[in-house]
Image (cartoon, rainbow, N blue to C red; front, side, top):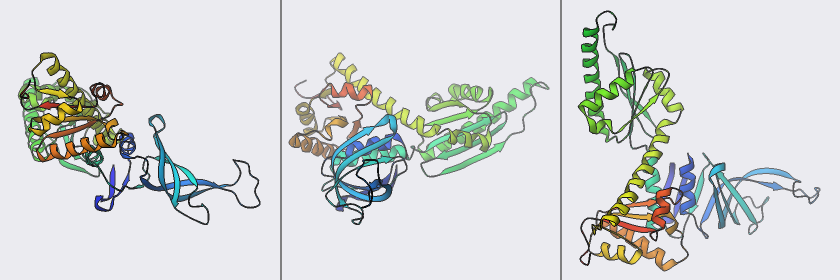
Length: 363
């Protein structure tokens, strides 16, 4: 997601959705009464044209509507919202008439709300972090050459790129193994330094042949914690060309998205594990979670995203306040999609649960 303008004080957010998760995030935060402005097309019939629905010229224009209905079509990669036109080309469109805007990827949208809730801001914050790809480290390796790069949403920065002198294996196996060991040691140190500097939680190790596999095993033996962050993928070559192949396949974006789902699944699994073990360090349901928050017991607050738009305004405001309080108490808040199994499981617990730092007094 590319944020163009963020002015919550005046209720305005301008952005460009770059993937399907971005579109779904916009769907999660929109509700009836919000105003959206985007590029759309509308069939305009001139005076001399008949009244058939398909008659007239389809004209591209920018319109602003006040939302009354919205729908998300994940299979078609678009978000549709319908409402009364409140701004636009008045010579072509009558204010107060109805129009449906279909928002697709890479199209700018301006959202204006009377008030942005903490939950809505949290959704945008989470998507922004995901969009930055958490500083993903991409390592392409082939034989005795290496290319290490940091990938974010907007940039690809090559950290190091070099080849090492290694004796061919068939000429001297012992010397080859020793030199490859030195090469792997040097590369591992570079990766460790880069991960520490950029706080990379995801590493893509790519390349052809057996070298990536051998290097991965080398890392497992020397730094198992680092090895757990590695996603090994096959590309046809190493170096910058291999890096370009990784980026062209959008592997960083896919892996970042998968990591989020895995993280959320682990949290929900932990909830049910603690419930089964009766540890007293988990609670669910609005009233119970609120009590835990009041005494500062919450470590991680989990909320299913269908709670953002519930019709019960009092309950929605209460949950929103809880998000604020939890942030002030340095607790984590995770808003989970009900479109994944883990989100559905959370919804079955009332849509809100918490992993606790310590058992509640009456547990």
